[in-house]
Length: 409
Image 1 (cartoon, rainbow, N blue to C red):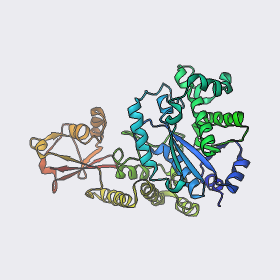
Image 2 (image 1 turned 90 degrees about the vertical axis):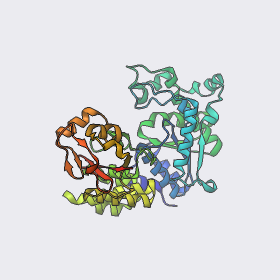
Image 3 (image 1 turned 45 degrees about the vertical axis):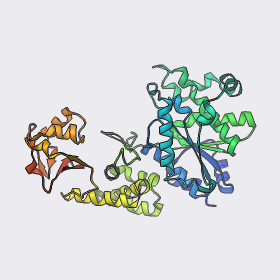
Image 4 (image 1 turned 60 degrees about the horizontal axis):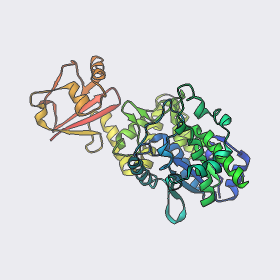
């Protein structure tokens, strides 16, 4: 069995470990059952989750058994980690729907057949807990003074931390205890922001069972400036094709900063390290080949090779000044809208939504940042009419990188 610890270290995943030497030896000698938790705060995973999904996949490929823990219980409370205010409380119905969406998505990346992986919902044991019994079994082992030194709580104390959220660490720690008892789970993995919560679970297993449990955290997906990646002006970059199209997904990675290409390749693709080094050890415009390969490989993992190829071809066609039908983001609009001319701002903001606000649209138009079929729009009050369409199609370009096709129906 290959040692996946070395693979994860070489590719830049690992940030912190509770017992580095022992974890490495454990992964060398045993088939380890480990878990990663996903709270269902939306109806799709986003690229911020994708680092841990890829780590889970590397672990499974090396012969270890993942548990994907979905937070049907913890989602009712909300993790305060990284939040300046309390998360919006979701209804049980929304949480259940989101859990089902996560199950479907994770099945694309992890093999759950024949007990190769397990998927469970912590609502199965958290939602029906007796609160007094829980406090007596679990709460007695947590020092409030120590909890308040945890980074996830410390940054919230000035603005206010609700008692609801204060329970989150105990709930996540109890998850580890339950998975240890039910499945022999010895290792919890998570993003680097989960370190305090993971330590709570490791300590709880030790106190109640006298056994050593382990924790390991991964790099968060940040750029070379330390800012979180995976956000655009239209919101998060989702793994659901209905929320972020394969083309937009491809374009996001095609346009990452030069300094971030190697890190993204290591964390978010299965390309061998030798190939990554060859692609990235270049200067100047040659890095564009690596960006295109990065975009293709990630899109292939998330959306499949066919969609990745379509997105790649559409991107090439768009930059050549012609669209690729069925691949670029498109909007079908009635020809009647354009009979008397549709003002350009309404087209951008209300109908295609490629610009978020009317004030932003005016700014872009002032800066000649909008083109129709390659020609800059010169006036803010410009009217778009049917005679501008070629074969009932019109290509809108925003800046250098965003393309959107409007089709007349």
